[in-house]
Image (cartoon, rainbow, N blue to C red; front, side, top):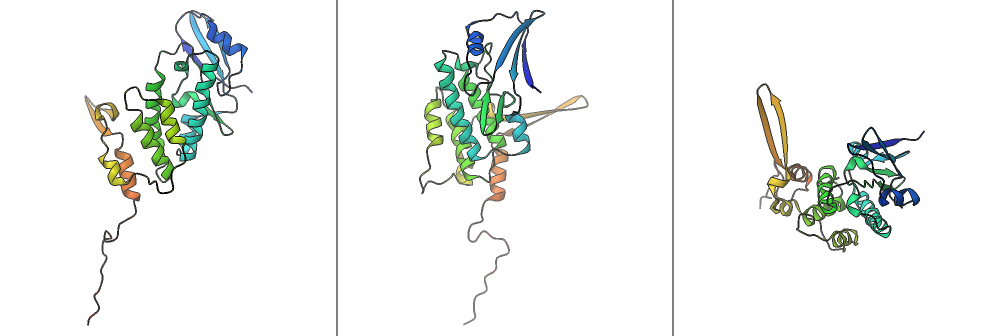
Length: 239
C-alpha cells in the first residue's frame, strides 16, 4: 500500500518548471512528488512507502558517528543532483520529519514553495544532532561539535565542513575532552532551550544552554584520573 505525506499551502496552485522537471525526471535521493490544486490551496504529495522519517528513527535510538557520515555523504550528493537539474537547493527540506530513511539511504523532500536558506536550515539540523547524538561514540562527539561550531560562522562553507567531517581522522587525533568542551563559548541567546509551562496564572520559564545536557552526560561517563577516586587509601609499609 502506498504511503504519502502531504504539505499544504494556502495559495493557488501554479505548476512551474520545478514541478515539470521533478515529474519528468527521477532525481537520486529526492522523494517522488506529485502536486495538485484544490479549493484555492496547493498540495504536494511525497511518496514515503517503506521509509521512516529521521525524527521517528532517532526517537528510538541515538545518532552514531557512522550515521552522521552516511547522512553527510548522501546530502552532499543530493545537493549536486539538484544543481545538475538546475533546481534550487534552498528548496531541500532539512527538518527531521521531512528526511526519510530506507535500507542505508536517506531521502529528501524538494518543496518548490520553500522560503528558507539552506545554510540556516542545516545549522538548525546540527542542533538536532547535538540533542540526539550518541555520546558514548567518540566519532559522533567529534562530528557534532565540529558541525555545530563550524555552522555558527557567518557565510560558512558547507563543502569545506563536509570535507572536514568526512576525512579520516589521524591516528593521534583525539576527541575534545570534557574540560575543553566546557570551555567552548556559544551564543546562549540563540542556542538556549526555553521551556514554558503554565502553572495556574503564572508561566515558568527554564532556560538551559544547548550543551548543558551534553556536558552532564560526558562528566558522568568520563574516566576518572589517577588520584580522583573517592575513598582511595594507600597504606605505607612500616619500615
